[in-house]
Image (cartoon, rainbow, N blue to C red; front, side, top):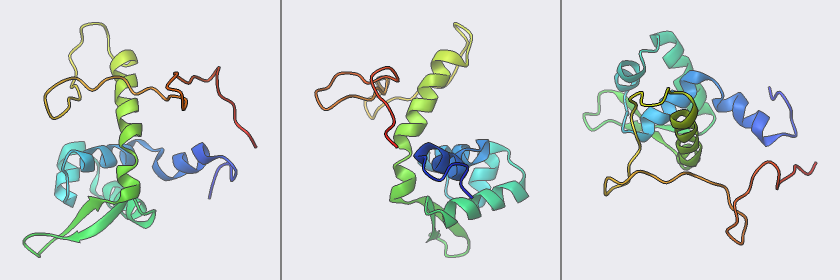
Length: 139
């Protein structure tokens, strides 16, 4: 059930807006594949993890894949799940700026060469930065 049927943000939050779903998607991006991987990385209770994995699979963000051993079910991000990469990066960058005290240690996201990932900034077709002051919602 959508909290606001005409708002894409509300629909997205209904699907991935809880803490555990976002952390599961984050960990899938970091290579988690099995139920045990997700449980160990997040510390989430098994019943909640099972529920969130079902929900993320039902909404098409994760898919079941054959495990190399063929014994256990594994999960992989779908294209829709991978589309959340920019969301996770932006949320991470917000956290780096606002959820830590100055000098407090935290993990950092780096590219394949070890360089810090630059800030994600929405831009207009001409490359100029977009903000809440320069955009509006059309209903």
